[in-house]
Structures are given as structure tokens and as C-alpha cells.
Length: 425
Ligand SMILES: [Zn+2]
Image: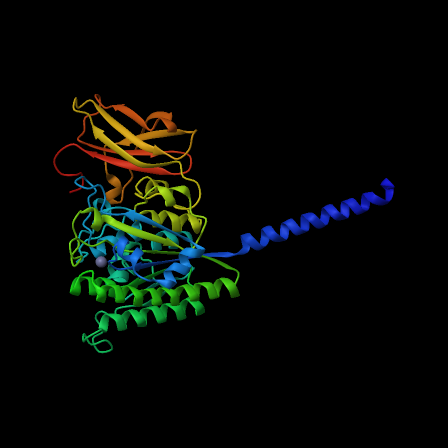
């Protein structure tokens, strides 16, 4: 081949290849990312796994399923009741009750300094719409803090909710909870197709209602099948968006608590079964921590924020109690105990990478809880793979330690509360 004639051809071929590569890349980066999470109230993991749920199954077939947990550290500073509103707030704030301060369904004084996912989203994208579809009004007005100055004055742009208190449209007669959920899921599906909000929360109530009324018997199983149909409706709407628009959606489904044995009618305590939950993802490329790490439900916050590429303020990052379930993870399961000698704190963690380091930061204040900033000291830097470290605290006069472990791909934290009330109480 003559070099004179072939050079332009080679250059042309290279140019074509570059243009082609550019196009594929562009098509991917241009896809608008959107996220939706569904909380289906009060379904124990083993029950979900045994009941016939064809719609959830087809999501898992394309995506992934795992069991997880909630309730904070049992018997310790972050123990959180396995109660509904508490569970929802773990999902939307990514922290346990010792931080978000919701311990029951009254939701009297949520601590909004731990920004919920809607506020974090609006901090990044003030103009992009978010949505809540829910029977309970409180989910928007109290937990998300729609329009409250103390919750950052954010607005939930699209909402279909409050049907729990709309006794005119939904008189509290036989089967009304199911009717409300049907309405909520229909509105959600319609709105997702038409409005396609960037971040949505759908709440489904009926399985918890039957659980309380009957226990984990046929009526409860039937209500799960009904919820499955409603979830399917929402998934169809999401798929409609992905097929017809240049959008990439993350769908996550979870529950707010398991149920207490032997009959499953109650919940609220710290038994293993009440603390065990499940997580469904519409995405197949979940990370290893999702599959084998037994993730806390607080992880959904960081999964959604990572998927949507949200910028998380550094001070907030240090407080989050979950682990991202997509992308790379370095560290999880941090724990800290004061040694009997009272002079050292023993730290441990699980390493998800072979190399890299953990930077251990420590503060004895908890200003974050009051809306302030804590000043951390870098105490030590140790190889991640060691999985443990010992901190000499002889020279530090305090009965409260907030410890942050920063590794390459994520950050975890742990408190040591030696005695008395936690700071801020
Ligand atoms: Zn519940």
C-alpha cells in the first residue's frame, strides 16, 4: 500500500473512530439520572421471600436483592426503635435516631441539621423537581420538612398525599388502607410518566395494616401481593421513562422494620427479626457490600446521592451512618470501645480493599447537632487492611468522643459515650 494514499485514509478512519467513541460517551453522559425509592411498610424479609411477588421478582431479575438491617447499634448510643416513622427517617436522612431524633410516630422534634435526601438534592439542584407520593401527610410535612424554615425551606414540588386524614374521599371503612395505596400508586405512576421528578419517595402502607390486624397470616400475605402489584405499576412507569426518554433511573425498595415473633402482629423492639429488613434495587451493578455486607437501611441515602452525583458537605459526610451500595467502598462496620483501663479506645472496622489507609479523626464536641461545626483532630493514619487501631486518649479530658474514619472511597463514624447524657441533651 502506498503511504501517500493510505495516510489520509488512516486519518479518516481514526477520525471516524474518535467521533464514534465521542458519540457513545456523550449518549451515556447526557442521560439524566433520576432516583425513586419505595418504602413498603412492615414486611419481614423471610415473609417477602416466601410470598409470591411476580412484580418485585421481575425487578430483582433485572436488578438485585439483599437482606439488611436497621435499629442502630443495639443496646448502645444509636439504638433506634423498629417503629415506622423512625424507619422512614433512617432512609431519608441516612442516620440513626441518636442523630435525626425521631423515636416514634409522633415525630415531635426531628433534628433537621442532618439534612434529608430532599434537602441535599435541593442544595445541589434548587430548580429540579422532587416528589412524595404517600398516604401519610407527616412524611412530607414533618419528616421531609416541606416548607419549614428549620428544614431549610425546601419545597417538595410534587406531592400526592394526606389521604390518611382525608376521611371524605377515604372513609375509614373496611379495606380503606388498600384503597389509599391503590390511589397513591396510581398517582405516582401517572406523575412519574408525565412529570418525571428527579427524586421521588413512594410510601405503601397496607402490609403493615394487615400485619397489625391479623399477624403474619393469609390476610397479610394477600396484602403483600396487592403491594406487589402497586410496585409493578410504578416500575412500569419508570421503565416507560427509560424507554422513551434519555433518562437513567435508580429504583430502590425497602421496608421500615420487620415484625416480632411469634405471630408477627407487633414490632418496635430490638429482636433480630424486627431489625432485619430487605432492599431491592432495579440496578444489577450493585457493589460487593450490597451483596455480602449486610447493609444498614441508612445506606440508601448514600446510594441515591452517589447515583445522582450529589455534592455532600464535608461536615455532613462525617455524620452519615450508611455505606454506598453502588460504586467502590473502602470501609464499613466501624466500632469503638473504651478499654477497661480507661486510657485507650479500641477501634475496629471491615476493610473492602487490600491497600490504602484510614485517617482517624476525633472530636469531643457535637456542635453539628446544634447546627455548628466540630473541629476534628487527625489522630492517626493506619493501613486499611489492618482492620483495627488503638487510640491513646490519656491526655484528652472528655466522656464523649466522635470518631470519623476516612478511607479512599467512603467515610464511617462511631461515637464513644462513656457516661451520663450524650452532649446536646
Ligand atoms: Zn411500619
